[in-house]
Image (cartoon, rainbow, N blue to C red):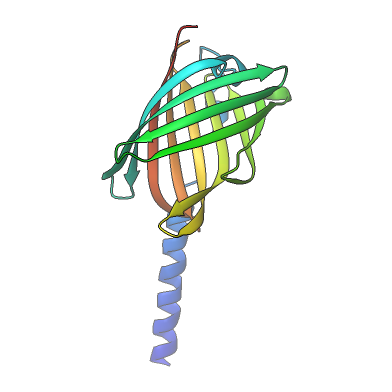
Length: 183
């Protein structure tokens, strides 16, 4: 009987821990509806952009630093964002997003290293983007979820903070500063 009670307590403690870890739901994008300047991804990600970023593990330790040279092109509601990553360890990567702008600030996107379709919503000066990235680590590829938030500061600068998780457990954060370059 004592073992059953102890097992139940352990299960309740585990359930409470899981709820605590996963219960921190994403913020409400509607809160940014009146913020200016208004973010339109097709406008901001049109032309050349440079970004500087870091990846932090769950303890806050900076694991990687990187820069991203980007170029966006739009034809009506369809865009391509070509990203070239250069990491502090010398590694290079490329991601090409194929984006679609829908009504009411909605966007969808695909990329070769993204599982399925990314879904996003722009309201006010903010954009929230959710997707599953196929992340190569050593000889394996892990599918990790990104809760990606962008905030337009002014016409040239946008800040980005993304939380990376697996099975609802936070693995780390990516922080970026974008700067739109003059044509």
